[in-house]
Length: 117
Image 1: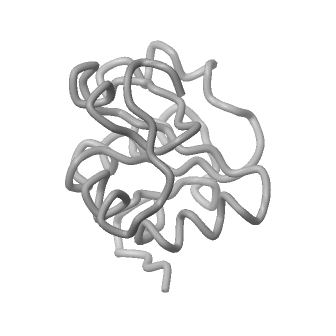
Image 2 (image 1 turned 135 degrees about the vertical axis):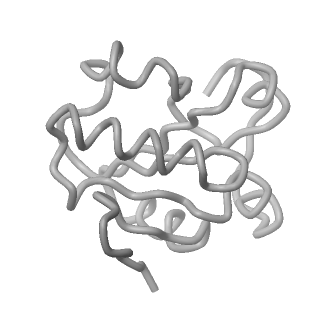
């Protein structure tokens, strides 16, 4: 079940919960890891936007729908969600996939490799 932690401008979700949100409609997964990590394996269809670029490239994020940030263990994705909130994204659109890419892969959810989504 999605969880809100006091002081965080986003909601924490698991990989299966995020996958359900993707199936439901207009959600976007934003992978904030380094290029080598992304190329090794990422959520199929994910948008790649390194955490250090979130503020500078904020306008590249979709204007509507949930934004599901993912990294390796949930730390960088949480930071990226905080950056998005600081840039004006509504908190009810921001989600951190807290079990990260390993959790996504372990759950048997769709994965791609290389630099393509």
